[in-house]
Image 1 (spheres, rainbow, N blue to C red):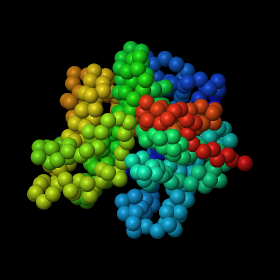
Image 2 (cartoon, rainbow, N blue to C red):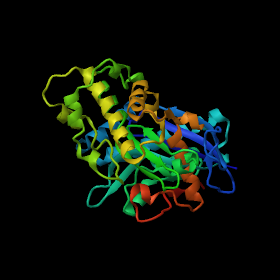
Image 3 (cartoon, helix red, strand yellow):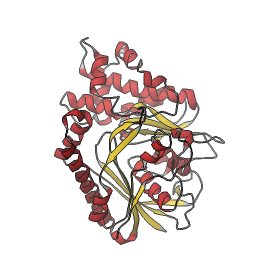
Image 4 (cartoon, rainbow, N blue to C red):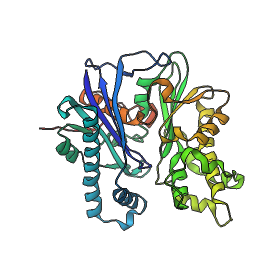
Length: 382
């Protein structure tokens, strides 16, 4: 058996998620070790996991770089690349210390980093993640695999979402059609229908707008359990305006990010009509649920849905999803044996295992790439 550590900070930038996994030494197509509800296959075991928040000052600097790029200079970008590398390395060391695992026992770290910009729609498409892998190598003493998305983009793909390939190996079932729904800053779906290849795409925003709006009101960093949204009423006129967004009508493959779904976008939709802030929050929650539900209706109307990401803890959002997808099941990936908070971190540990083994980790049916590709660059220790 080999140990791999996966790390990612998503669109919401709420924490650096890290997961230490054990993979069979034979390199088999590993599946998560699960309860009887899950699929059969060689076990991939989650040993330890953690979520390490960014220091507030660092988080503010990253947010300024993402949201106001014209005001940030090259020196700041370079320093943040290194600073995020330091933060990732510290999170990795802390997790290993808590798990009692020496760095020498870890084959590699799979580091997604922090996305700054994702623009697969331009004449010269690109995706850009920071968190200098050389810094992580130096400060952990562990080889690092990083920069997973750009090879897929270079091959004509969206570069996102990538997790569906892992979902296909970890969660596919011969007993039921499944959708793995990631509710991070952006919502994306992985369609695992029996007898069909994996499909996946971003449906639209999940926590990104909900977090941004409640923070704009200086109430909290996020809407715990969706309680504030539940206190408001859905504004049907605003909901209709949100649903006019052209991205929603695009066919898959497609991906998006906070480059599109951000506060300026929301403010344009709000216009000048007076609205109660809690009603806007309720409408944003319904917008997320409805865009996911429409994707399910179009692609997998009877599939069981298993959610992961921070939004899986939003009781109001999960209730809205269940209402729209009734009578079919909506649960979290905990029902399949994997904590919904760490699915993506586990995925990037698994991607590192694939890369070191010379195995592809993208799915052209998901991203639209020209073919299978080995993802990521390898930064070896020593």
